Amino acid sequence: MFDSIILIGGGNVAHHISLIFEEKKLPLHSIITRQSTRVGNRSSHEFEQIALAELYIIAVSDDAIAEVSSKIADQYADANPLVVHTSGSIPTEAIDNRFKRRGVWYPLQTFSRSRSADWYTIPMCISANTRRDANSLFSLAREVSSNVQYISDESRAALHIAAVMVNNMTNHIFDLAGDIVEAEMLDPDMLKPLIKETVSKLDNMSPNQAQTGPARRGDQAVINKHLDYLRANLPQLVAAYKALSASLTKRFRE
Image (cartoon, rainbow, N blue to C red; front, side):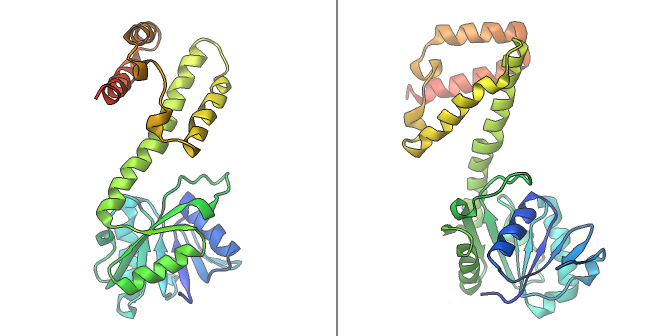
């Protein structure tokens, strides 16, 4: 597989990759952030002291991938290492083109530093510009996950849109729903059992099968009553409620 891996990034994704690599005793040579380089218990604040490795995993913000890969290329492009990033939406070509071997090692999950990650269940999306490197990345991903798939840049970008919808956008809806409850001086935690039940249903049925509610039933009287309340109390939520209700109604009337 790989004898030496260098991980670059100081955010949540890099943090959790470092934890699982250390747990699985994978050959993680060092971890580099904008602040420091860590090799065991030793650290350096000079990015230029980055070592040569067989694999560099760039786990930084999307707009920093090109810059970071360029800094590595300045030193080691001729050594022909494999360089990958962990982004869902950025194409492989974002990596400096001085590298002949480029790829993606994308974990499809939301990460928070305060929560442990169940890597065994996390889908890993793999691509590379050579079959040999894709197979090597696949093998590395199989060390941490039971669900590893080869996915093209185009399919991964579409998958990332879906991921944003089911994670970021639904979480935003939870947040907005909390505003409604708090406006009535109620505890937002009252919604948590409903949220958990909604998500847990997906273990046994599709989202389409699990859908309930007034828009699903075409109950326009209830929808109008909800909109009247929002216009009077939380007008900033009217557009979102109307758009989602219209989408749901159309979905189940087609």
